[in-house]
Length: 98
Image 1 (spheres, rainbow, N blue to C red):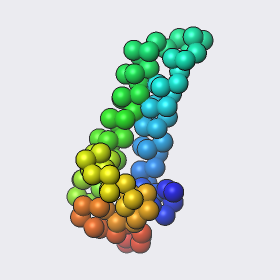
Image 2: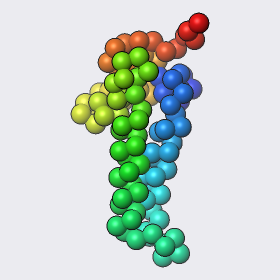
Image 3: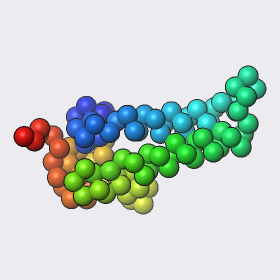
Image 4: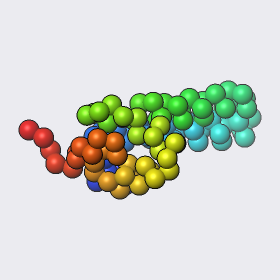
């Protein structure tokens, strides 16, 4: 997924993983009383993870927020995960730049 995608090529996979981790963790942790996380806190954690990904994963060239765009137009998800170019400015990140 990430290695050949624009996410991997721009080194932003870690941002997606943190966002997904917070989203899942905040959603699942309140199910166990041992976690000590309330439903309110879990919701805040989940929303923070979602917003983190939406706001921080961006094109190094044009600064376009890729997941923000994808939230508005689901057709943007494929280029993020399968393409090597920015869905907005079309800059190709598959080749290392010298």
